[in-house]
Amino acid sequence: MQHFTAYLRDESATAAFGAALARALVPGLVIYLHGDLGAGKTALTRALIQACGYAGTVKSPTYTLAEPYRVTLDGAPLQVIHYDLYRMSSPEEFLDAGFREDFDGHNVCIVEWPEKGAPVLPRPDVAISLSVREPGRALELQALSPLGLLCLDRLSFAPPR
Image (cartoon, rainbow, N blue to C red; front, side, top):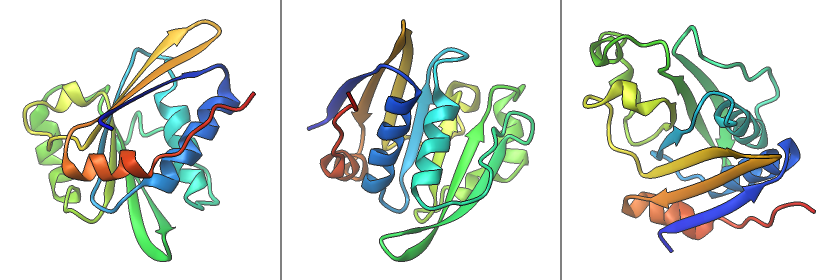
């Protein structure tokens, strides 16, 4: 399977999908999140990071551009780095900040507004698009690499009723 779609009727469904995606993560994964402001990109990421066992506050990296979180995946330590490139004025900012080094094949990197980092941003393994479909959100996930296919093969999600 290279493609997955779901309707997330509310925030609890978004949180449930984030938890399902957390269980499917593999080290080195690069995830792009696409969607308009308010589509649920940060809410999905927050749910994923919390489902990985992070007990602290998961904040939006709108002003810091990146927030790293130490978690455990399948009993091994892992760093999940959440990027929000919305306020970035040029792709060179991404390079100047040294963010490209985080995409090292070990960290899971989740990137909101990836188009702001093109063409210097590493290619995604998984692309997720969220769009508002009142009263909820439509989600589309595409696996774009062998690592993305592995993640998608591990994904098991049934929306809560």
